[in-house]
Amino acid sequence: MTSPSFSYPQLATSGQRDSVAKALSKCLAVDVLQLTNPAAGAVDDMKAATATVASIVVWTSSDLKGAGITKLALHGARALTFTTAGVTPADAPANVAIVGKDYDGATIGETLNLAQTAATVTSVKCYSEITSLTFPVADGTDATIAAGIADKFGFPSKLKQRGGGASILAEIEDGSVVGTGGAAATAVNQSTTVKHTGYAWFQNPIAAELVTIVADVLLADGAQIIAAQPDYPRKLQIRVTDGDSSISAGTVTVVGVGAGGEALSEVHNLTGGTQTIDTTNAFATVTSATVASLAGNAAGDNIGIGVGSCLGLPIPGTATGLVVHKTVVDDADEAVAGVDAAANAVDPTTSPNATHDYGFFYSFDMAHTATQNAHSHTGAEGEGTFVAAATSLPYGAYTPSTTPNGAHDYAVIYERDVS
Image (tube, rainbow, N blue to C red; front, side, top):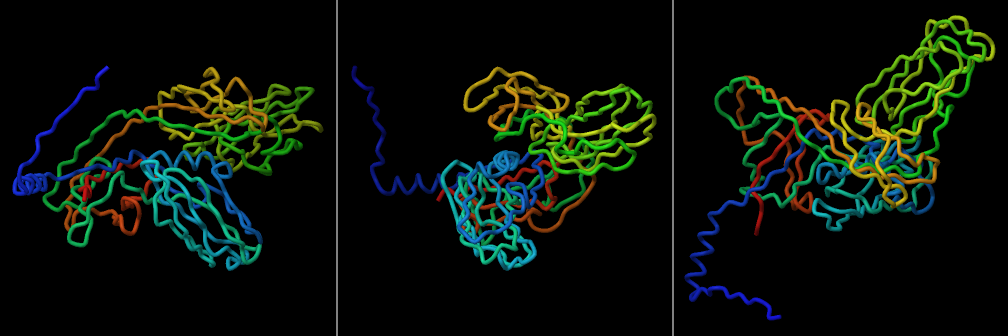
């Protein structure tokens, strides 16, 4: 079969070519950085504070928090933070070698000097994925290092510099243009529902049990001792032991934070004999568990709290319409089952037992209402912080003036550098 051939008109003279170049130079290359409800960064998003050691340490993606990996990838690319603390911060290693991927999935890296005082440093580059974090031999074992995510976002293409500054055409926060100058605007409310997609990965979550959060202890009014936190966001199991059904009154209130950063508080009745009570929501952390108004309890009546098999997805608590499109267990597809859309959680057919890995591909809806109040702006275009590609590779970076908290939308319309 003969392949099709194509021919292109040739420009006869250099003058014609110059004319075309001049005409094209008037075409402005524009791009948009769109950030929908990014969650706030935290100093331990990727790795909790970990004691330093007298040897080379390498953290790969399997050593990092699944929720942090998901947060990092949700909005294209973000900068990393490394926080030095501990009894003797000077024991911290001198630097960390970062290897990862940029907004487009290309491999990038840098060697970042770490603070050897109680302080936080931020990466120069913005990453969508982390391949490895390598620390040299520390100066001692009495420092800790935590890895987190900054509120600095990478652009999807190279930010153009003009006149020594970023060529920002417009910056928008929550439906309002900021920093444009001009007259007051009339208050306007705009509501819409936006479809979001996500992926969550859980490495070897432990089997469901009844005692890791609160040990099996004698029932008594008051705050219970929180022995540990859930390994991943999970629904909890409250175990009440009351063999003779003597408990006639009493409640336990569990307070904590959900997988999407929302505050949670649940009250459960302790009457009804020996039973296991599942919480309604998936808890990422448990702040307190308090027993109150207890009556009729006797020796041998106990309470314990552990984790269930239902895994919480990192979705804002105000989201609706959760749909899990695909479940992967140990790199093999499994039929989607056990979806609790109200709790943004999944109870997979293959139950956790500390040896299975899980991946969930999902989508959800978020209602957005942007209120533009009467206001006026003066000064230069844009109120956030913009960093040139030369100092925040590969494309430049943006830090909003209003700190992300999972409830703010941002958009930056900018001139793209095509040189």
